[in-house]
Amino acid sequence: MSRYHVGLDLGQAADYTALAVVEWTPDALKVRHLQRFQLGTAYPAIVDGVAALMSSLPECPALSVDATGVGRPVVDLLRVQGLRLDAVTITGGDTAAHDGQDWRVPKRDLVGGVAVALQTGRLKIAAGLPDAATLTRELLNFKVSIDPKTAHDSYSSWRESIHDDLVLAVALAVWSAERVGGSDVIPDPTGGIRPAEIPSFGVWEPYDGIPRL
Image (cartoon, rainbow, N blue to C red):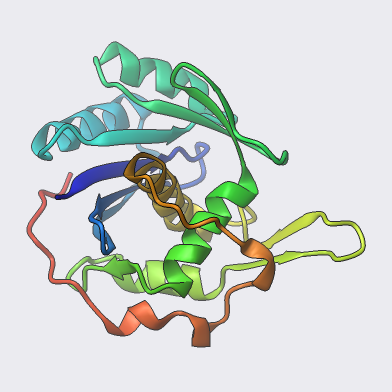
């Protein structure tokens, strides 16, 4: 049994827009496709590309889109295309909430999902993906900590540069996959991520030929 989940991080005009396809199975979260759209790509062209990819995937894939900031108008364009999607507004709160398919999700939920997937070895990255090495570098630079005095979350390299876009796209797909997949693992982002805690990078999944956009 497997399901496909697509995460889309919509960048500003001078930022990358990134897309990730994650295949959920009971044993693993397999990153099957990664893409950064070229800088300056018009949003209608991005919408067309996402629609084409969604139509090429099996089993009614789920789409989760960052609706924070510039994302809302593009979310509307995607829905005009007839795509069902979860529009995710990233917040600094503690509890996820939704009104239909419009979600407000704390950063700690997205970060925690990736942290758990890394620390348990569930996250697998297809070795043949052109951006696999870039994603690996982003994940290795990605740290999470909580100030014990204030209990406030601190996310280094989180939305601070254009080099976080693949991480966020994967985080959105993982969040969707684990939520729908019924995972009973509770994300715990308090310990941070260090290279020694990422065992999955040595276990590469073969690229299965999902079409490029």
